[in-house]
Every structure is written in C-alpha cells, then in structure tokens.
Length: 386
Image (tube, rainbow, N blue to C red; front, side):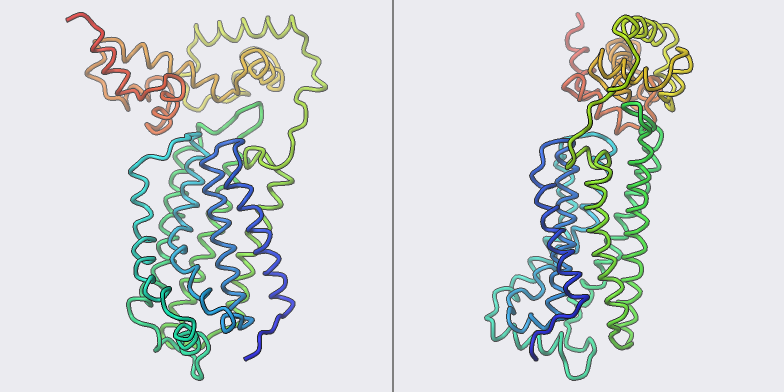
C-alpha cells in the first residue's frame, strides 16, 4: 500500500495548515477576550488535527507513521466543550475560568486514559492494528473493541449536547448584546448562531453516518469526503472572518481603522451631549430597561446613534454596553448596601436594575467592583454598626 495524494487531499491539507496557523494566533492572542480566543484556538487546533488524521488515513500515510494513528481521537471530546466556552466567554465578556468548568474535560480524560495503552504500543504492533482496523480486507467494525466503538459513537452526541447548550446560552444573552460601540452586536450573535447550527448539522450527519456504518452499511468515501470538506470549510470560514470581519473575533487580525474620522461633532457639542446623557440616565433611570438600545437612547436625546456612540467612547472611554451596565451596577450596590434589601435575592436585584440573567450581573459586578454581589453584600453587612 503506497501513499497517494489526490487533489482533495491537497485541498484538505492546506485547510489543516491554515487551521494550525490560525489556532496559534488565537491561542496566544492577548487582544480582545483572551479566554474566548483560546477556546476558539483550541477548537481550530482539534479540527485541524482531526483533518490531518483523516488525510493520513486516506493517503495511507498511517502505514508510514503508525504512531500518529488515533492521536486525535480523545480530542473529539473537547470540540463541543471548546465551542460552548468560546460562545460563553465571547458573549459574557468574562475573563475568568471557574474551577467548576474543569469538570467538562472529564470525558476527554477518560477516553485519553483508555487510549494510553494503545499509544504505548510499539510501531509494529500499531501497524498490525491499523491494517486490521483501518485497511481490512473486509471493511467492517468487527476488529474494533466494543468500548472503543461506544466511545467513537458517543463523541457525536457529546458534541451535539454542547451545541444545544451554546444555542440556549445565545437565546438567554440576545438582549444584552444588542448594541455596543454604536454598532449592533447582533452581527456577533448571528455569527455564533450560524456556527452553532452548522456544528449541529455537521455532527448530526456524522452521527447518522457512524450509526449506519455500525449497523452494517459499507464505508462511503463520498460521505466521508463531504463531512471532511465541511471541516475544511469551517477552517476557511474562520480565516475569512478573521480578515474580513475582525470585529467578530475582537479585532484579532486586522488593525482597526481610526474611528470617527469624518465626524462633524465638535468638542463643545460632545460636552453638551454628555451632560444631557448623564442627566437623562440619572433622572429617568433608563438602565432599568433590560432591552435598552443605543438607538432608543439616541432618540430620547434627539441625536444620531453615531454621535451618541462617539460621546460615550471618547468622553467616557467606554462602549455603550459598559456605560449602561455601570449604571446598573451602581444602583445594585446601593440596593445591596441597604439593610432592608436582605429579603431580596441577588437574582431579583439583578432584574430590578436591568439585567435579565444572573450570569451577566455577576460578571459585570465583579468587573466594576472587583468582587461578586454576594461578597459585596457580606462586606456591607460587616461594616454596619451592630
């Protein structure tokens, strides 16, 4: 069996190379949200590694490099996890990885530990397993151990479960992401939804294909090629978005163009609008509206959304999202410091000040105060005279 390369192999190999390059950029990028970048980098790395392993199978290079066989397999249990946390950190803005989140890698560790004895085999023994499993005279699944077959099958529903979690999270966080920096954040939200639905369809199709193979249907190079091409398209899509729509990834590649270059807003107008804005927020407490948009606020001030965004960005050094949430946090601090608020839960206080979920409330409270709402309440109670 001599290794052979087809045109499709070369296309997918280039996709894997691009994926590894982008993964390196995201994993070590410090701009934007570092955790979101790292999880996307991990996702790209795993996809590229899987793509490379499939190419090695197609071209029969596994017979030359047997130690590369099944290296990518345990990482399949990190694909869904990586996508979910990429979605979660990109939408919430949190930059801290909680201890409890490490539980999500337990399936990966179980599969990896199970595969360690195979990884320690000699090249000759691995070569024998490869010939019996990947290039048998009669294609089938009889040479695959039952537990390994179960792990191979479960990787797809495992990924689908995390796609479901990501979609549920996106539904819960659609309102807070409406606008920032004068631009609708719905673009980023839509981008994540497209990825989630794409992943869902991809893993759903691969699950059905895998089940049909287990049930006795013969191996289909066409279906395998189609699914592998989908992985390549994903990598190319990330690369395209990184260069053409850098705002989707916190401006990770392209340098941002100078903002408000052509703005007609003068310094005096900026100061005047800022005074009106602050007075409006303090008097009408518009931050309590959980679905407050930049356009709504601009309409109340009778100025354009672009000018309002410029005022907030340049005069306060904030984006619209942080500007509104800072008002919410300040009011929450007053409620938590008030002894009469003990009867109210943190969630009810979050709703009262304008948040529509506890996660965003906790994240922004810690961002602006350095502590969680419960820690702040406890501190206030300790400082009160008995």
